Amino acid sequence: MDRFLKILLVVEDRLEYHLIQRLLSQIHHTDYELTWVDLLDDALHEVLSEEADVILLDYHWRQGDCMHLLNGARAQGCRVPIIVMTDQMEAEVDRSAISHGASDYLIKGRIDSQLLERTLRYAIERKAAEQRLADLAHYDPLTGIPNRILFREKLEYAVNMARRDQTTFTLMYLDLDGFKQVNDSFGHDAGDNLLKICAERLSRCLRTSDSVARIGGDEFTLLLENIDSATDIAHIAQKVIDTLAKPVHLGAHQLSVGCSIGIAVFPDGGGDVDTLQKHADLAMYEAKVRTGSHYHFFSEALNLEAHRQLLLESELRAALKRDEFVLHYQPRIDLKSGQVMGLEALIRWQHPERGLIYPDQFMDVAEASGLIVPMGYWVMRTAGKALLRLRALLQETEITGVSDQLIMAINLSVRQFNDDKLVERIATLAKEEGFSPSHIELELTETALMENLDRIELCMRALAHLGCSFSLDDFGTGYSSFMHLQRLPISALKVDKGFVADICRRLEDAKLVSSMVTLAHSLNKTIIAEGVETSEQLAMLQQFGCDQVQGYHYCRPSSLELITEKYFSQLTDVSASAGK
Image (cartoon, rainbow, N blue to C red; front, side, top):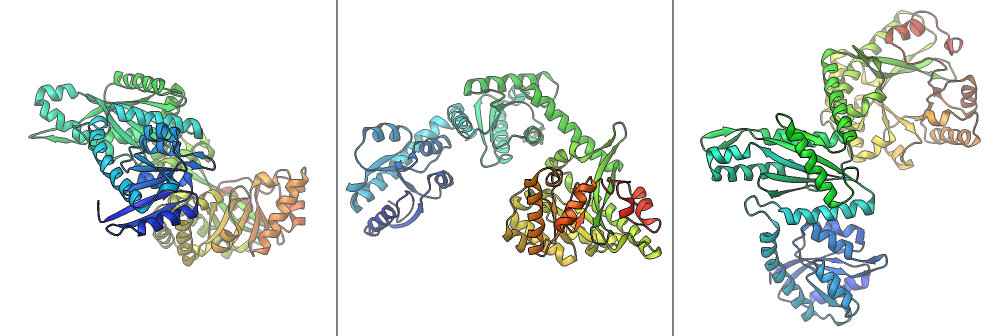
């Protein structure tokens, strides 16, 4: 046996951990590194990482037995031997655990250092021999990827896990176009090389949690987990098509490979293994009917939705190029002075045929496709120029209704925080257009904040160093904690309009908003209420001590021209113009 072995120990009891640790220390000719996992739910990830040379697994747990872990390890093709430990000789363990992939088992009360060493050694040697046979049985000898047998096992496991966890996954059937002609024109060796290249490319363009298999001839399957968006599925299908379409060199010849992809999503595309395979296969043949490389969803509803969203994405790209987006602005009013303290920039799409389109009809596609990033920079540039114009008017004209510290609030999405050049681009935009970052307030939601807190914090601190301030939008709808509110450079909290809507009718909502105001003040944050539509709501928010408000009661989101006319063209009394 090797001189150094890594052992993964999966047991609940710390005493058992110390016992195994002591027995290993008595084996002198081999060094061991022992890693302990005491939660069964966390163990599968560690098992599948295959960092250990051998695994010791307790059979009995308080919540049941370890069978689902053994099934998961086997279905995912785990190559590490697993030794099950049990309290006594049990026919059930011998029959079920061993048949589901365990290499051996140990009876806890009878383990000594010699038995442990011998069991570990035999398990490793036997697993290596079994693996050589399994590779022949479960992997395609030409491409090295799973074959039909292993794919079937993986699919059965995916169905069982999706049923148990009430989740979804995607099955794709893929057929290469024109493969027979390659064989006929260039020979079978060239065809084999093409299959190897395609298998390698498919493996590279998938995530580690996904799997690819060759199920025969020129047919492949893709199993994609944790994807439930029709847009995301369509993007992956297109990515596969584009990856395979890259030129392939076969000797002195260069050719491009097309493919047809059928897509079935569990459970809508089939609630069991056979139905799912049948429907993916049918969808693939539907795709083959069309000329060129295409994909097709079995569910017509999903198919239509995916095409609708991809068409919308294409239109959004064109809209960016044609400058079809516009900004509307909504003022934010200070309740003590009555002055306009700032404006929130809100994007709209001025479609040449459908008229003005609101963000709820396109923002999800912009976010999913990544178009939100260039759109966000367009908003920053346009809103920055508008702010310069309005602040210039403040200096030229005596306008009592607007604060001389006027700021522009701009929404940031989580996708924008993932842009490595976010801070640099905002600094560059401010310099190019001449506006000060200190006059910009960046709004982010609680959901975005929790997406990747560490990364977002780094970006926020760098932007705060530039001078930008931050507000937390939709406060009360997410999961931010006191620690996050204190830790991050957030200066204002915006109460979601859903809480404001019923404060005059529901005592619970009124108490909740009042508590939010108290909390914000105790943390030295400005509190802003959104969605204020009536004078009764306004009076109650004033009673609570709310600092600022925005909503239809004062002004609907409007074009820069209307905002300028209403608030910046003359001596303005905001309170007198409320509701106009």
